[in-house]
Image (tube, rainbow, N blue to C red):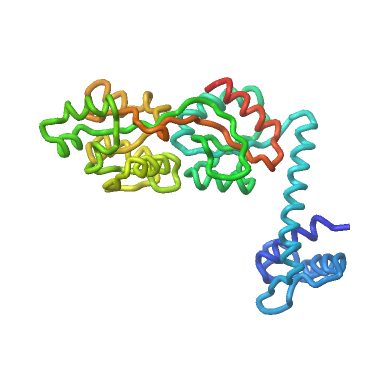
Length: 312
């Protein structure tokens, strides 16, 4: 019968390809590690490592490495499932989303969730869309919140609410591009915010890998223009602040723009930043939750989705 501890120790040895380093990482003696590996090799009656320097996995070792990870992941999921069945007295929920979206959404959901389920350990992982998709795929995140569709396979999605990406255009940019015609251009943008009107203007964009950037690139391609990008950054708040100073045009989600200081100042005529609804279907979407079809869905995840649907 396969011993879980043997498999865990084997995986560390397979990662390090050095028994001395693996033993040190496991806080056991090298002899003890060798015994665990020998037990596995006796169990399967085949060598798992070529005893070379450095060590290399045999073909059997490569197959076992893949299967061992699957076995240990299944064991972990089983423990989670049994713990849930046991009265939902404790659990863990790992949520992935961008820090900007989290600022708007989480205050609406988490207080209610924590009030109802105080013993659930909540963990937030922030990153761009590509990083969060990868975390969900590899089981490092239980669910992600973002604009649909998610760019990862085997994901089940739950729609939450409509979302729109707005175009933020400073007066200064329009004055430079269309001297003497600013009001006319603004009226055109208000009626039909076509990116082709602004193809010669400077743009401030967040880095590739972020969902808003992906949508922006798709809209540029659809409009058949190559934008003049003067700055790229990971922080969407930075591009909005720079747009408010007249440095360039950018994109920003409508969901939380109404409560933003820049937007409030604009209403009070303190900035020259204008927001427009884009004439592109890709700018109009749905905010949703994604979770992996192949991973066990805990009760903690189900309850979070329920509260999110009721709140947003």
